[in-house]
Structures are given as C-alpha cells and as structure tokens.
Length: 184
Image 1 (cartoon, rainbow, N blue to C red):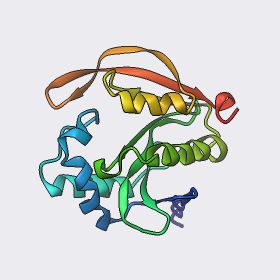
Image 2: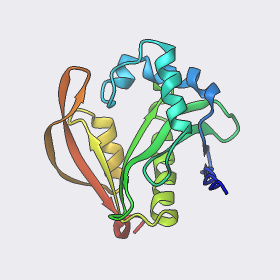
Image 3: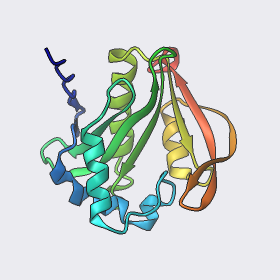
Image 4: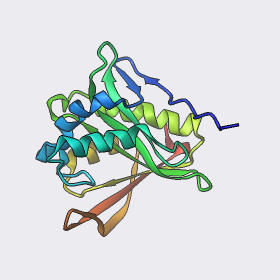
C-alpha cells in the first residue's frame, strides 16, 4: 500500500493565512522573483521568465516535509499570494533547519514578514520539535537583520563567500534561534 502524503498544515495569524502553494500562485510570485530590488539578497538571480517562477512554484508544492516546506503568505480575507516563508535544509536527527522568506515589494513595511515568520517559527518549534533554526542573511540586508533581531535570533558569525548567486560569490551572516529562547 502506498504511503499517504503528509497534509500541508495551514497556519493562521490575525491578519494572515499561510497555506500550501498552488500552480496559480506563480503569477503573484513572479512579482517578487522578477523584481531586482526584491531579489537583491535572495539566493537565486532575478527570474527573467515567468517559466522560471512556474518551475519554482512547482517545487514549492512538491516538498519533502522532513527536509523543506514552503507556505504561500496570503491575507486572511484574500487568497492572493503576497510572498513566501519556508524552512529548508532540514536535519531531522539534529533537529535543525534554515529559514527563508520574501514578501512582494508592494507590501513591504507592513509587518507581514514578521507575522508570517513568527507563525512558521511556532510551527517549527512546537509541531516539528526542532531545536535550532538558522537564517543566512546578506550583511547589507538591514531590513532582514532588523526582523531577525526582533524575533530573538542571535548573530553567530560571518560566512565569507558562503553562497554563489549567478556568477557572484556572496557573504552571509549566520543567525540562529534555539527553541528554549523562542517566546520567552
């Protein structure tokens, strides 16, 4: 008998609903992925073709929950995708994962990223029983650093030439949050 897939949890906050991606989210996500400013600190180059975003969204849908999972971020009363949050590089034995997030530039500075990431952190610590979550952030990404600081992450160090984006090597700053420090 075939193993049944694990249902994708829906996470809710007062303003947001985090749900599984659908193929029709590609158009909204392309607003993020085609925007050079939004992608300046992302781990991929700008997506110039909608087909690239469609391929990415298919990967977001077909996830392996023990290793990675993506949520489409939507407003509670509107199902249009505003961006994403995810955990990835999951190490179940070590109870550790990395996180990522991106919100469409038109919705920046409205607290959506903080609210969505907080809901995902609750899920990762409470439901998955993770011990440690990590964020790798470009040193110039002041908005993301401010967000991660507000959420209680600690800076652990600079990783030189840690990530290759296109043909460019990029530094990352490693931040981490332990379960015991979340929601003190």
